[in-house]
Length: 267
Image: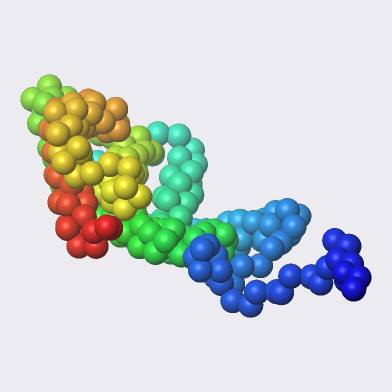
C-alpha cells in the first residue's frame, strides 16, 4: 500500500487568524498601525491646535491684561513702577498675556499630548502616564501659587529693606515683572519632583528606601536649585525654594512607599 505524499510547504493551509488580544502580549488594546507620514500629520495637527489654543487664550488675556498686572504688582505694595522707554508697557502686556495664555491653555495642550501618545502605549504605561500628567499640571499650578504667595513677597521684603535707608525704590515695570514671572515659572518646574519620583517608583527603577538614603544629596541639590532657579540673589528666596523642594522630595518618598505597600507581591 503506497503512502500518501505529504503536502508541500507552499500548499499548507494558512494559520488561523487570532481575534482578540494575545494573552502573552497584554500590551496594546485596539492597536491600529499607521504609517509614519500619518503619525507626523497627526502630530502637526495637534501641535497647531495647541498653538492656536495658546494664542486664543493669550488674546483674551491681553484684553484684560491690566487687572493681571495689578495682581502681579500686589506683593510690591508701596513701590512706584516706572515706564522707562516708549512702549515698554506694551511689551510687558504681551509678555504677561503670553504667560497667562499658556497657563490657561495648559489643560488643552496636555489633552492633545495624551491623545497623541496614549494609542502607542501599553496598558501599564497608560495607567501611569495619565495620572502623571494630571498630577504634573496640578503641581505646576501649586508651584505658581506658592511662588506668588510666599516667595515673591519674601524676596521683595528683603530687597526693599536692604537699601531702604539709602535709596528710594523706583522700579522698572518690565524688570519687576520679569523677576516675578521667572520666579513663578522656576517654582512651577521645581514642583514636578514628586511626579518624577512616582514614575521612577512605579516603573520599579528606584525603591523608596534608596530615595530616602540619598536625602543629603537632595538637600545639597535643592540648595543649588534655589540659587540657580531664583532670579534674585537674596538668601530668603533661596532658602524658601530649597525648603519647598526638600519637602516635596520627602512627600514623594512617602507616596512611593505607599504605592509599594499597596502593590501586590509577585511570587
